[in-house]
Length: 250
View 1 (spheres, rainbow, N blue to C red):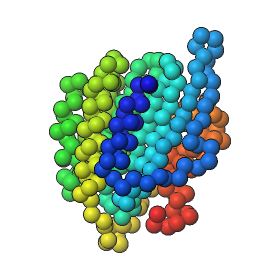
View 2 (cartoon, helix red, strand yellow; view 1 turned 45 degrees about the vertical axis):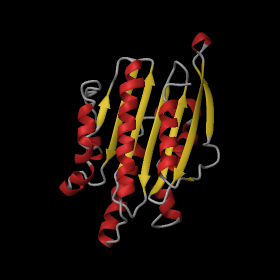
View 3 (tube, rainbow, N blue to C red; view 1 turned 180 degrees about the vertical axis):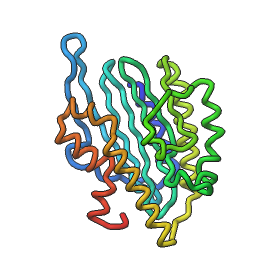
View 4 (cartoon, one colour; view 1 turned 90 degrees about the vertical axis):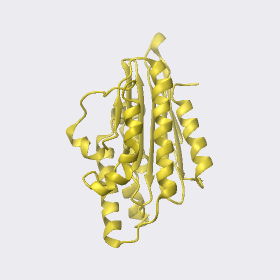
């Protein structure tokens, strides 16, 4: 058992119980990949495993789970709604390195400056965010260019103890995911043409930013090389542009 396996197990169990979950195609060569890092006693085998699903309202539910023993543990778990829903994205970046833990949890808004949108999707989760502040304090500065892509309920923290990840971070992950699934169940399809265009552009802005600035790029380059890494980022992790090129309105 690794640090973030319980998070992944919980998420998949909840999704299967709540949604009409179907497989989402994972391009060949990305289901699992491994490399060896370090030397001597510090040598570790790093295994990256990919998971992907879809549902009637969610275009892609995907996870990248990187297990590298004491060298690193990473779970990147993101949910992308279908383009005819105004749902935010669900994003969890859970990273453990020898120097500590980096935790980011959020429901990333399509329209951060839209007051009605924030009332609909951020206000209900602010109490959840606030309930974890005592145990999971703000993790410090993050890039100004990233700020438009995060909500006021963005949980960004750097726990010093692994026990805090196993308890408080896990509890926060569960609470955010449950709240998100409630939003999904309540979501109604959007039919207005202008609104649909706005949703597609908002999703593309987010995807392009995340693909360009993916913090895992350096790690994957080191383990698996740049060719595999770029195809993994653009062909699987953030694949909307590819999908729209094949089937507009996907």
